[in-house]
Length: 481
Image (tube, rainbow, N blue to C red; front, side):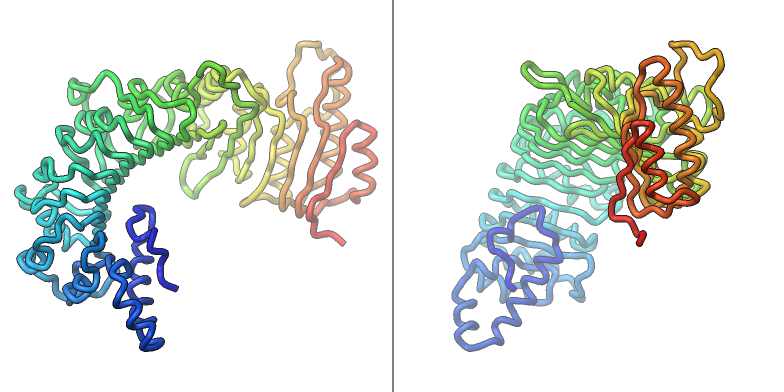
């Protein structure tokens, strides 16, 4: 089917769909004479034009006076490029029709920039998404020299380039998307400070300043009162520290922060807390928060902390005492900032690194732990139970009332796709329940098994034993007969 015409100028539309739209048009012309005549009489069907195609003139003629979407995609097979003089001649008198310019081919950037400099007063969307070495381009044709030729631009997406903070059209931007390679520097922060009407911001930077002197002229405030969504990625915590302290967001905005390096230094827990949740009058604090712990081969564990519409993705660092203290202090500070809601934890891997990360959270208000995904097996589950306290084989003889076992607030335990020893599980719960009930404390109330293969005890026997201890066993979508 032909593309919905309302989406031709949609900046979120994949470039593949524009190419497919053109191909489908040509196929539909072959359906019948009536269809061919109908399509040729409708300019709006022909306004998406690949400027690197062999003969863009014929498509442009059919577009007549419709708003134009000029594009070029990296995968398209177009042969030799038309020179700028030819494109300029083709577009002569039509620059005011250009609403969208989306280029994903490095070898047409020069042509695209020349087109912009020739003047596109009604351009609303500019997308340059093929990484290139901007420093090697003729300075006359770099985007810094576009100047004020884009008075109506609303959507800007680039890879490896950031506009000049002096461009007056920044104040009109509604969507700004800057992908790496990108450096956190003073110009970038001034760009953000100038974009007060932004509703969406994606900023993926892979390196930052080498010294404090580089950031001497940093703006004192980046206030984005209209922002609905922000996706921020930086290399190390120090790069985040260049942005977070001066960033002001509406309390209702959706926000995401990913720090690639280890969370060991360079950014304060208060700035991260403020980024994740902004207190506002009449706003009810979040009722729950969640943590996901996972590993990738040959890397340190990563943690995804989610609360409301906010997300923090980071590495807590190696399992050393100082890293453990810093990770624990960060989560504790964020939880305190949002009034300590119940916390659920999902463990995606059960190797030693992820288990060590889980242990660091043992004294927090965690009410649910789920074990799921890669690496879940008999040994992995046994190690998870050890983290919960199963290595304590008997009730401590002289246990004091204020003695704390790990994860005392745990109310629900979920195992998914696991080979689980139910005998070990019931033994652990029996020990824990005796201790906690001795001091009128409560612990586990529910265990859920999803697609699990239990060993030793059968499900009925396990359910009976657990019920005596006040624990409900739930079997969900299991593979058992």
